[in-house]
Image 1 (cartoon, one colour):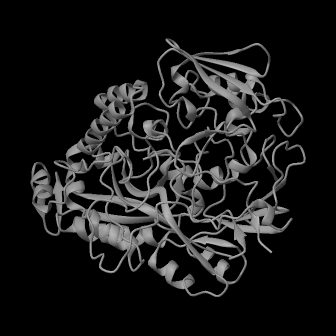
Image 2 (tube, rainbow, N blue to C red):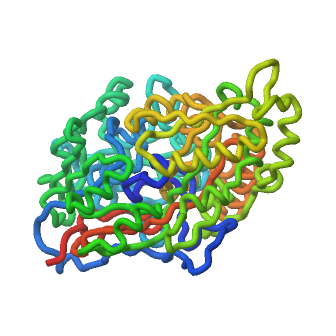
Length: 559
């Protein structure tokens, strides 16, 4: 799969979406096993975005879009920063050196860098030429110093920088000036095959060079940006983020007067869409889809996203015991969970049986055997070693086998999934308690610090395998919030990240996936379809395929 940064903006499917995973694209069926798919069809394999020539769009207009929670941290590289909603907005307001195109491949964004080339394989050296017009919206030029600062603040050497992950940056030996301030020379100490994933989004050295700036400079504000749009208002009371065209922008002029993002949790975004208060809404559950499919003045667009719903385990408390995590993997019928998510949607949803690849990726294979097959008897056997049957639930030393699953209050599908697992785990003598928390607190207070036993949320891919590395590796930084890992995974990940041959790298990533299942790290459920209901006049926006980035200069309305 891929670690994304672009994707649909709501997380009503099964919680909330974090913009970080390790897939590299994917389209079509969700893969794995399937339930009763009679009469259902496969999802389209390419984007449906009402593609329209920019010359045919009207000038101006206000686009109103939902986001699933209030964004408090606008530094994507900070530990609280990588949310799908934030990334969607940052694609319009911050530099992305490479973007993901409609085919799922990285493409150089020449608005910022006109050339990026490998000038040496040993050591791996990349030379970038920054566009002469590229500048921050405070009027200062984008230079090699900004690249150097991004490396220094995110390479993990100084723990005072609370980073989301150091993958790739930790492999860099130096970032130096080339012939001019607009020339950047990046030299690696260890080969890094996903070097195109780095420096996106890029932040100004003037605003993020100290730990205080890095951690708090973009908290609740965006002091300096660079893109076709700039954030002009953050109204936490109203839950709205407003962006307007940036007068300093040197590239293609955007068509809209403004875009207003509104924080709406649960199904409030569907209500807002039906009331014509917003122009587009993601409808990836049966209930949501049924409410909009026959709405007036609505176009339904469909594609396959790079997001997937999963159950995350923590190594805190009772789940520190690997055997208990593996027992839960065997006791949970993931196919039943996929059917809960798919419901009566007109598209097939099967289980996703790999943590690193979507089912349509070249390297995809099911690695659930022998550690994650649905096998109630196997689950009971694992639990019998230590946990004895004592009434409805097992116990050990007089302590009941009881764990909690933490879910955001504004995610009804998460609650449904939790309730199904509650019944499944009861069959093997495990009590699963539901813990509902405030949506806006879900990540910052619970997921990020690993303050949970189990939880449910959505990973959103970026188009690069490397973006998922810290989800599974050990250490005190990164996105392995449950801190479930092993030395084998760490070692294999280093091999995969330094392997330039795609086929060989894919084989290593699948070895990693086998180990991830073997330690009971987490359980993918199903890839998330992109089913979008929107204003028929909205163009070049909608159901994007995989991790495809949005070209905000082309989004607008037809006459």
